[in-house]
Image 1 (cartoon, rainbow, N blue to C red):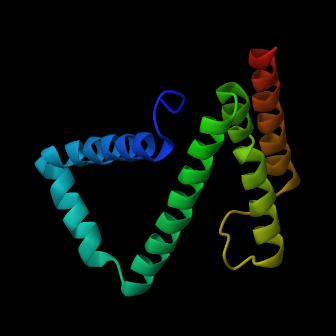
Image 2 (spheres, rainbow, N blue to C red):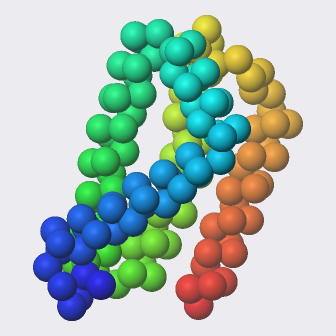
Length: 130
């Protein structure tokens, strides 16, 4: 799409498709009731966190799609698979310096399992790329 059309037009149509797809979930009454109940229980600070997360997410989506438009899709998408590695690094840092923010106890065995899992994912990514 990005090679044949203007980037911003393509981006707009992809985002419209995502929004329409999300709204289809509201066709079921159970989902609508659940959404309204969650909305009522969320405090103002929760809305601020959600809004900040959405702004960061939107910026990440723009950067990711710009990277896809500018370079080979396989390399860009492959680099996206390193997210789990960065997430593990962030979690270890948070658990070490801000233990009150992180509820899960990090032991050597759980950390080892997570590292092995990430290594297996990266090996699989390498095998697909070769």
